[in-house]
Amino acid sequence: MNLLDTSIKPGHTVEITGFAGEDIFRERLHEMGLRVGTVLTILGRAPFGGPLLIRFNTSFLALRNEEAACAQVQQN
Image: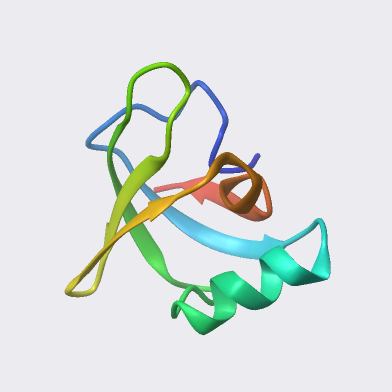
């Protein structure tokens, strides 16, 4: 599943298992520090299909839908 999966609710933690999609989005996620094995906490989503807010390590990120769709995850 990817980060846009509706079964992932705020407060859940997920682990990145891989990346799929366009190279530009995968590179951008990698530059932001998201790598295979990184554990993320889902904090919420902006209204009307806006960005997804996540926390990992000591960082907070807002990911656009195109970027979030590239991250393949599994729930912990």
